[in-house]
Length: 168
View 1 (cartoon, rainbow, N blue to C red):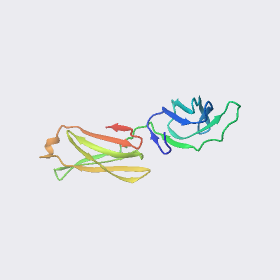
View 2 (view 1 turned 90 degrees about the horizontal axis):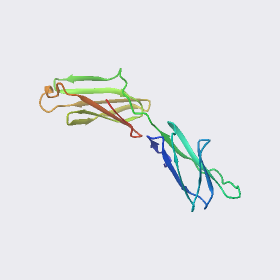
View 3 (view 1 turned 180 degrees about the horizontal axis):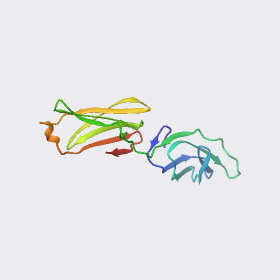
View 4 (view 1 turned 30 degrees about the vertical axis):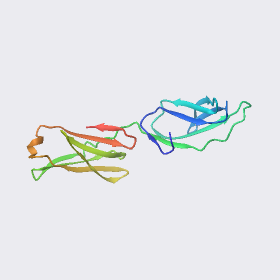
């Protein structure tokens, strides 16, 4: 990963270069996660079961004589395994002027986008609020009369920065 990445998985590969045949120690914050040899000056190691949250990945290299390099510059990433969610007590769906379906709700703060879908009609909802409170709203206008959507299912799709998706 690159510094600043937001990942939606707890498994990823760390790759890099070092002097030939050095032993590279990979750290997650201050915890050693892996040791790998830089064969021909290149190393690659899979890190698995990484927990949700912020991680500073660093490395040191150790030569065959036991001499160690300084700690590398950190690569800061965030692992986000949790899909966005709607605050169940906040959503409202109303028919306005007998022709427009108003949709609004509060979602988890990391929700970046929300889309309302009925049949083949979809609408990107507008996000307002702050980093600690995401509010989405929009107006859907059916073709023909509002009865066109009677008995149809309204689906809301939410996506966060890590591309976690929730469908409600």
